[in-house]
Length: 95
Image (cartoon, rainbow, N blue to C red; front, side, top):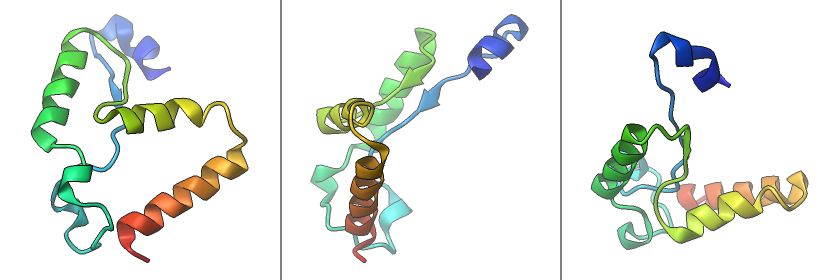
């Protein structure tokens, strides 16, 4: 919506929806994921910049599993999506 609203002003909008990225964000969370299971920050930034240069409006960068998860959440009931999201957050936060 914002991309269309701002298009005439020359402002470009790109919504980026990544999965877990191996950064300091998780330093105090002790996730059950290893750094190898997370996306590489440099690779994500490069993918985002390419998408921005191409004029994309939405990008789900990174591993195929993240992209598939984003796609399949459109096909299943929201209650299941919320339950899955909670389990992912628990895994990342090691709660």
